[in-house]
Length: 318
Image (cartoon, rainbow, N blue to C red; front, side, top):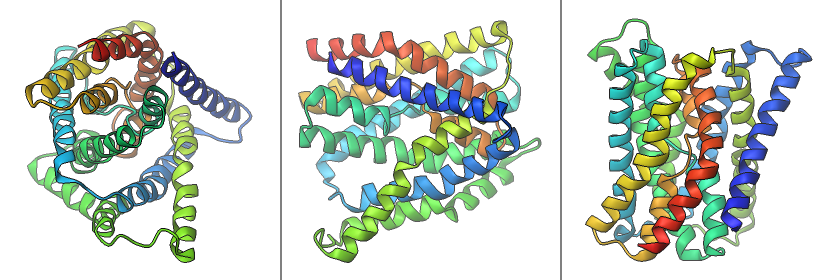
């Protein structure tokens, strides 16, 4: 089960980096005040490079957008379920915002890519589907919805005008600029063998690869002591939404719209990914409860060790 080993490897890397961050905190090399720095390095530096690098080199096929649209719908439903569950659990506004974010967005572009490669043997068609589903199906809603939501829930007093202001701020952000430029450059078809183009993309690749380290540092610096009794209800609710409901909703959408078997399997696996660390970073970056979000991300990674193999077996058997 190569995919299971890939999952273990990704979990080991994330947890180890977080533990190293805690060690650096204990040694006073890092402190909680640095969390904002690493969050901004993710959202304003590494993530824009990753977005542009991935999107600008992909020819966007209109026929391939359907799985991405199903992924968008799945995320919106999951966020709605997260909002309802958070209100039932009587979460405060900042915790509710964090819970909604981790309910909707999983590790589709980090753990997801690794698992797709393991499951489909570097099949180019599978990787293209994964890229489009992740970058457009999950990435676009992250940029257009998650960040304004995080801004809205992260502020003490916010109304509709604040939401509009949040959206306007996003349209000036490095992530949105990278998104627009990435899509625009995808139509230009730059010569891949040109020395200048290769050098620029190598630089962007190095910057983009730093996202895992910066994200883990941000998560580790967000972690704080939370009584287990307080964590148990949100963990249980998020487990149902993130690891059970999302892949099943995606599976239903795939069958409803008649996707090919390969698109079906890739979509469901991407939807089955545990809550993404990037969601915790965005939550903290814009004022939501980053400590709760980071604790929930770690919990979902551990629980996904049992759910992802089951989801994979379900997709190949239907």
